[in-house]
Image (cartoon, rainbow, N blue to C red; front, top):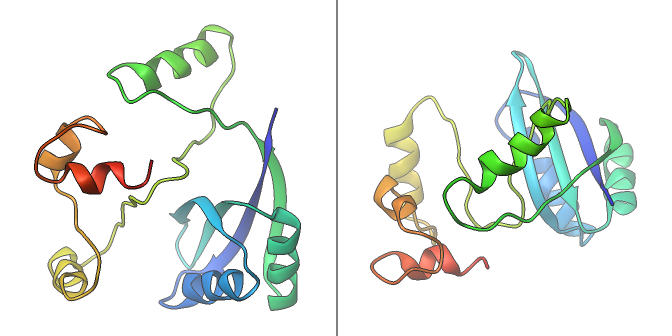
Length: 153
């Protein structure tokens, strides 16, 4: 069983990813997971969406260089060692995992050059920033920040 991933090459400039995401929204395409990697002047953004054919049409209409690939998706339990177990199965069978990323989560990690400025800008938005202490609690646990960690499940 596999799902279709869409890979698109975008210029690494402010606003390019947003244009794609706005176009997806306009076409009623829901992003279920994504990964963005910087390769210098350009980046590769990989998407898992609810309607890959519609998303690919959107990208083609935008003139973007995009392609689809089948990938495996697995749901992991939120417990120590689960990711290591799955990667171990692949390694033990001689299968190289060339990349992986998370799906269906309301949490994203953003790498930016000016972390303090980005935090300040998001503080004025309806966005909850998550700290390392929040991540130390298991998903679904009680305590401060627990609601934020369980809303996406």
